[in-house]
Length: 168
Image (tube, rainbow, N blue to C red; front, side, top):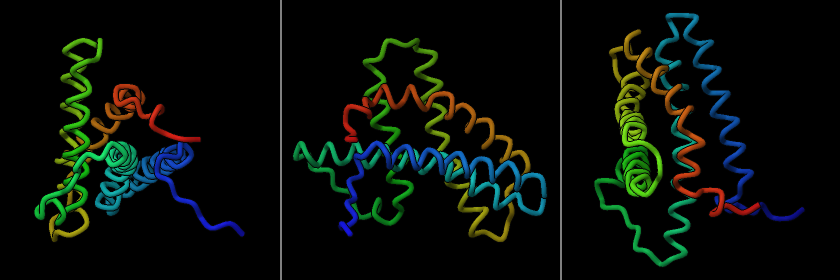
């Protein structure tokens, strides 16, 4: 048996995580049917977005590493990898989107939607670690922005030129 070769640039890894993201989203929808499961639903919605952001970020970080960029995190960022990943991802999209031939309105919508990921991280932390529960209004926000994120996802892949950085 060959040793497991893990190269995060493999297109199959991103595609596999995209399938899992869809499963997470489907699970969140089912969990919403039972109000007692709202907090569990929040986690599934959050992870349906986060796993895709994480994978794209790994691909971009690998590219930076290959170009000998110094891509170190400061000590505060190391404390919360989700925060660092989201912040780094949003920053990279903001930089790349400047060159795109899409309307300023659409650029702003994409950035606004991505910046909401920080808020959703907070919702997930509240749902998982706080004595307070996440409310119905927060779940509506999650669903709304997840739909927007899903709508922009393929465009983000193109903006960041992810497919050229992946290997088969």
